[in-house]
Image (cartoon, rainbow, N blue to C red; front, side, top):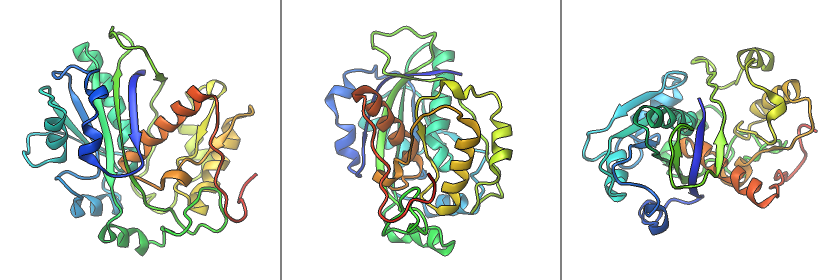
Length: 287
């Protein structure tokens, strides 16, 4: 499955109404297009029970997709703000939410022969959400930098991203900004605090042509355990010289928003022909 990105925008802070009131972005889509929303929140605001499900591993590997009809849902709120009249779908899949949303949108675009609007965002700077990650010793709000030896865990962040996407078969008046060529999801419900063995993960991604990859976004969350496994996976699969960048050093970990914001940053870097360096405050844990 391919997904072509026609337009995109992102922000690293939470201002939902201001973000949705972008006149330029609204001028680019038709109001009857479908809307796919990826957040960790089913209701308007942060849903503690939904967060608990994610922490306990119940949302790993089996995303929840809801056709949203709840009047007070985040999905409906966003759709109403955007004046959209098509179907609303809500994807609940933790920090993989953006990728599931883009994959779903590409399939919907193929089925309906129309572009699809995708919103991905989360606001998780409230203390009552952080205690659960702290209980696993998985957070380090002070540093939380990828590949940094001083980091004891990831830094929580928040933000939003929005895309207009389509399947390659769909013709539109908008130019293509980027192409997401393939989607591969590999998760294990019991791997809550450890991402697993790099060889095992690589074997499940055997169809990827690594020679075509130009830039690697390190999605591991700024934990020494996760960073080392991701780097080992990178070293075992990418045999040519490409950059590996930990964008979470700039963003923090934004849950469902993370993938969309990182994709936006990668497109920006490609467009500007520049790279954001890894932010290392102390000593790097890999070369």
